[in-house]
Image (cartoon, rainbow, N blue to C red; front, side, top):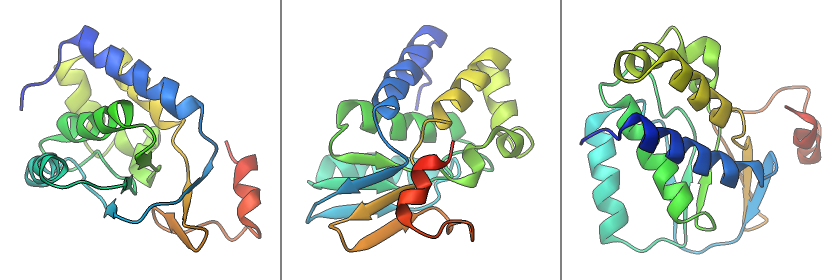
Length: 165
């Protein structure tokens, strides 16, 4: 997988940030054929597999649960796959925030190194500005709640999520 130029990477981040800025922390969707994707963590195998899966199948909704970066050798490719899907199919894609989309974690677990060695520290900051716009939770079909890894004990009602930054 070839990485985009700095200009193209920045455009993808900005386009994704625009889509994400319109969404609340608690997203609600109704769909029948749903693909739920857990932690990718920059896995080249998972990234290639998901790319093929999108081409082969028709889903009403694809939900990414977070942790797109850190650990694997295809971190930028993995997050680009997610952001591209979001930009191209904004109403059929939900991208949630995982703990590795926080700068203090992705700085020490590999994403910082991957981005700085390919682009720049400024690009890493741009990625994290985009990640800060990610929603925390999806309520699916009014019945199920999807999050990355749980919710804070301080959350009493789902509506409390709207107060989180």
